[in-house]
Length: 112
Image (cartoon, rainbow, N blue to C red; front, top):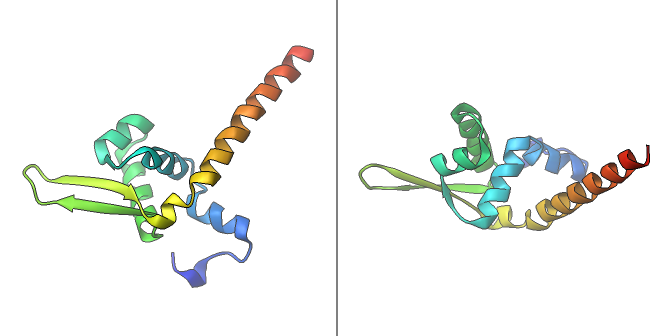
């Protein structure tokens, strides 16, 4: 996505870039360490087609890098760019909010 295609509203920008469930989870995994395609797929449990599409889009948006190694068999690893790493507080905040939401929902259901 080019700069000119980004939404005006800052919240809409982040939704444009990582609004798909799988993209957020890919970034969350890559915050831990670089990973190969098969490892990401194993951790996330998504189809190869969906993972490929999301990885390509994240790469086009400058959030991840696809590193190819000239080995036999070929080896490809994905890792976050410096811009990608700036999403750490966003992901951590989402994780914290999700835990709190689940806790509050559980309390509300007990009160019924």
